[in-house]
Length: 77
Image (cartoon, rainbow, N blue to C red; front, side, top):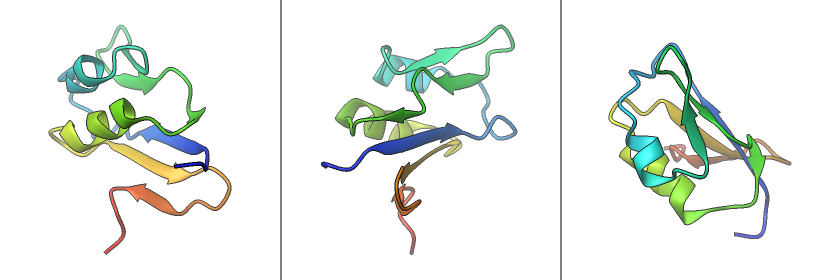
């Protein structure tokens, strides 16, 4: 987990459940429209951020390697 991550939330998919905030309160915020966004889109890898992405009920959170764009979550199949 030495590479930096780029974290995105697809706001067209996000339903504002707040699961990401519950899993990683330091890393995600809900705005006035109850849409999630990462506090720091480019960041060091974090188990909490990965747990938030995995726990999103609509899979609105994606994580890629910042340098290469390679998928971290969801994994490419």
